Image (tube, rainbow, N blue to C red):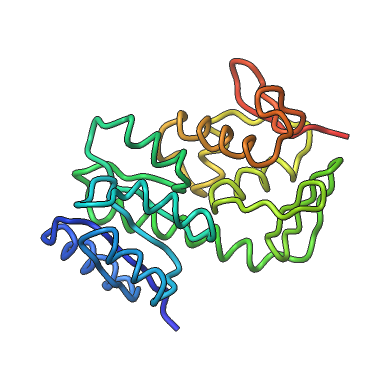
Length: 228
């Protein structure tokens, strides 16, 4: 069965380019021009990945991303206008895994899509391994994360970061190293994205996100996971 992708943007000309580029890679692509249409496709198609513009008529892409995140860890790539850093940061805070700034080349978008899908498939193919640190448990086989026995829903990027840190508890990783690990290649995106992902993860995992006990900052460098 081909990988299914839903793309939502109010620019029909852009959607045609996106659809063509992704279908050339063998993906099954469904498109919508507003948030309501996107929500319908997500429900009906059950895609493997969602490409979502920030600015849409009616309900925004940010609102749709936030609604999806309440019940799903579906990988989401947000599209934002060049220079709109606030929109990009909000997209990450609302649960997006990555963002691509307009205008972009079809090759760049395809590269981002492939990288995220690799992270999903890599996690699904891992041998069973459970990491337990205090009240935090990470099961690589099921991709399930629990804190104090309760499931924690992480995005694909958040899970990738946590898994990287959990493989080497106590080791400090720079933001660039984390970006490189996420993309399996030279870093893509800016380091600020890592800060936002860590902030979101602390909100989900820490009893007091302002005084984290697990996801620790290495000042002036990056982050590490606590070591028992």
